[in-house]
Image (tube, rainbow, N blue to C red):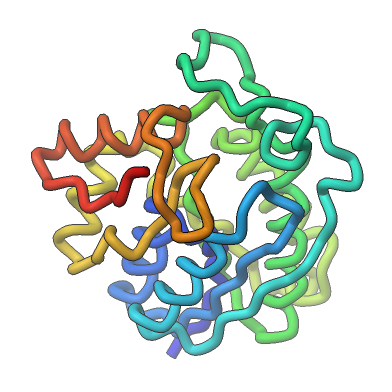
Length: 224
C-alpha cells in the first residue's frame, strides 16, 4: 500500500481527511501535536479517531509553541474571542507559523517512511482567515519540500494533499458522513473542557455548528 502522513488534530476537518486518505487506499500514519495548546481534549480525540479509522500508526510530537505565545490558543493571557471574526482580519486564535512547523515535522517522518504524500485538513472557504491555510502557502511549502529533502532531490516527488481546500464546511461534513465518520469522536472547540465538551460560542464552534446545519446533518457535538 502507498503510505501517507496525516496531520490529525482530533477535529472535524483532519478526521475527514484521514477518512478520505484511507478510502483512497493509503496506509495512514497519523501525527498529532502537544504544542502548548489550551487543552489536551483534542489529543485524546485524535487517539480515539486514529484507532477508530484504522491508522497504521499514531504518534504525538511535543513542541512548545507556548514558549512564544502570541495566540489565544497558546497564551492564557489572551482571551479566545466569542463574538465572531471580522472580515479581512486575522484573529487572535491564529498560532504563528503553526502549519509551517507541523508540516515540517510531517515532512521529516514522511522521508523516514518513504511516503510521498502528506495530508493536511486546511480549508480556504469556511475558515477563520489563517494565512497558512491558503493554497499559495501549500504550493510554496510543497516546492520547498522537494528542494530540501533527499526523497525530493532523488526524484520521488512529495505531495502536500489538501482535499478540503475548496470545500465548504457543509460539504466537508457531507463527505465525512458518506465515508462513515463518527463526528461524535471529534473535538473542534478552542475552549473545550477536559471531557471534550464544547463551549458553543468560539469561532471553531460557530463554523462547526453552521456546517452541520447547512449539511442538514444532526450535530453530535457535546456542548457544555
